[in-house]
Amino acid sequence: MTKNILDCKGLPCPQPVLTAKKHIEAEAPAEFSVIVDNEAAKENVSRFIGTKGYAASVSETEGGWMITGRLEAAAQDGAECEACQIMSSAELAAVDQKVTVFIQRDVLGGGDDELGSKLMLNFLATLPEFGEELWRVVLVNGGVKLAIAGNPCCEKIQELERMGATVLVCGTCLDHFGLLSQKAVGETTNMLDVVTSLQLATKVINV
Image (cartoon, rainbow, N blue to C red; front, side):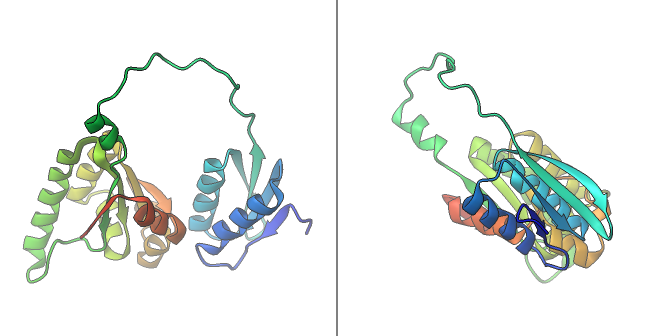
């Protein structure tokens, strides 16, 4: 293997993403490839290198996939920005508000799962009240079942996504429950993105 082809077959998430991250930071390559052998790693690496300015292309290889990242041209310097207005202190403060909702179950509360399912549906339906402050909705463990087609809560999460919130669904959890192919909303994610979502948020709501 050349140094710009990273063999990540057999590595659990988020190791393929972390390997790509370290390579980008150390080498700043114009082009590199990552070989993975599971669907979650393929999606995670492709999306991650996209956030680093690389255009990702995926091709099948023996026993997996090769994700190739090519550095995209930087935006033109000195481009004129749209006319801006001076913002009030309250408006500036609102810009910095980033609420992450961290959902770990497919029901809300304990005691009765039927009631918990209804409460979860109502909870998700109320989240738009946060407005632009709602930054990310992170689904892990049993919470990933909410993102599956046919779950009544899936439509509510799709509404949150349409209003601008980023929905992240744990790929390892989807794989554990055998639900990767049934995900109907959100981006398949890894533990690095989950930790970042909690770290950068100004407020975290645990469910």
